[in-house]
Image 1 (cartoon, rainbow, N blue to C red):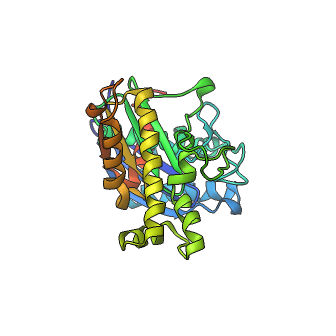
Image 2: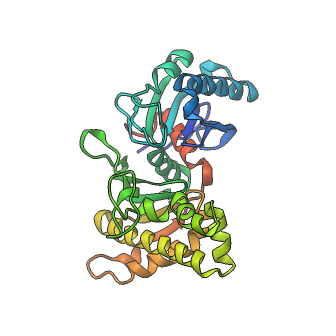
Image 3: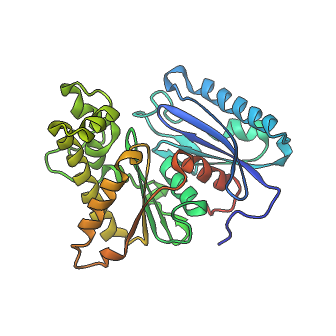
Length: 311
């Protein structure tokens, strides 16, 4: 399969999360030439957000002195569920008020290029496969640990999808019979135990209202904070066990904001768990930190906009 390369092509990547949105201009080597970041603020309305994205793209083109005619395409990675076939969002939890909103049409009409919408975790795994930690590997499983837990799978050089093109929600794999209840409808899923929100929720009765405060307290040896982090670590290792047996990845990539402080701990727990496997070659799975950091989704979305990654 072709990878983006050569010269003369540029694409815009837009990475929409529940709290912030990043817009970047990326060349065919995967280099971010310029980027802007802004609060998402879904409560202020979808039309306002679209206007904000359009202004951001215009500013970036002006900043790097490019004409709109030099733009090859636009890729959008958005917190899911989303429907890549129709270009619409279906996420009342992370993006309330944006249900069934069309992400694609206004951008296509303004800039005259093809626009592709994907789940943000799928865009992230594409970015890491293109120019990051997963380059040259297949299959790849990626988990992103931030406010929530997302995941993407690359299989046979394509984004793995389920029935009717749906995105697999790896953050809602069950890992506990008695964990906290999640908006997904179950108790004890990975997101309910190992996300930033989960850490903050568990820490709030003890005065730690943010995940960073829980992590700092755990690093300082506070036993309650340590127990919260240990629970998250076990959940991540349990999920990795299940996903490794289901997809047999060559590489397992961990990304998201929490991995700046928890990668070594989560990775060690996953390796230890896989080493026990008797039915798969668990010891051969490489677990690595996402190389593109917070730009993985943006860069992956741009790769889609360049049209070099199959639909």
